[in-house]
Image 1 (cartoon, one colour):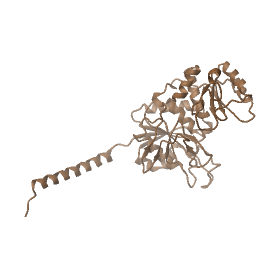
Image 2 (image 1 turned 90 degrees about the vertical axis):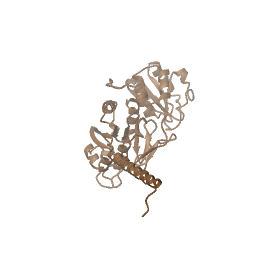
Image 3 (image 1 turned 60 degrees about the horizontal axis):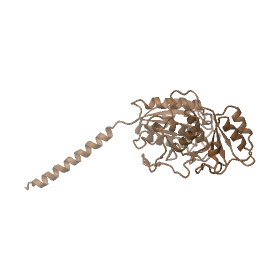
Image 4 (image 1 turned 180 degrees about the vertical axis):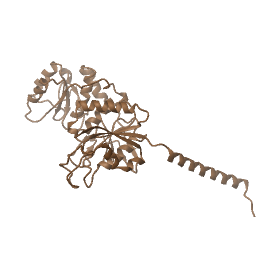
Length: 362
């Protein structure tokens, strides 16, 4: 009978130690507590229902409560400790400034709590991108905030809500999402709030980030980031809504062939403090409208030149002499997001040069 040499004995001992260490690491990982994620429900298609399983248009939005949404995706319990709260129950075309202020204050209150690690907001897709950008500018935490919706109601054969909700919770519970700003989880993709937009009336792949690109993907129950926004957001912004009960009135005027100033004049007459001009091309101003825009600016109304085309930079002093007119340009923000930034900017200042700085910062 041979006896093990000291070298063999030490080798076997080392192997046992490595094995025990791996078991301990696996046990520790298995025992690690799940992140606490609060789902704030606001309604929308993700909470909608149709007359039949093939109804993917013409359904009724905002009929299902948050507890039923959570119960419909039992897999959520594997990735986070989830609780729900019904903030609103509306179709998102009815989202208002007042809704945004209530939602933002609730989000900031929850994120200040040590027992909340991230937030998911279920939302209708029509104005989801706007709510996301508003929150991106006013949330005061680096903890993840993820907006999610659905293009088809939960009663449809191919409902996208359940997997979208699962991915959103997965993202909100992840360390990868910390400090990335407000995010949108749709169609197995991760988008940044500033640049994402709805591009199709009804298909599940509607949410895209043209030109600048999405931030990442979901695959194998894990979020993967490939890009991040360089624009300031959340804790790095100068906006504070904690004491605001209302936002300044800012409206959008659309440019088109044979445009006239009737709508613009009506909005200014109705008390608009700012106008986003969604111009053709590079934010061009029609000769029939320019005098009314100039007059509105002289009355103290802030004018921002944006573009209806949806992509590209609106060049300052390009299609108009912005310095002479004292106008602001929207940079790459689309008209609906330019409106949000201008509203918040006007809570801080009426100086057009400072507001232009904000458009190049956020």
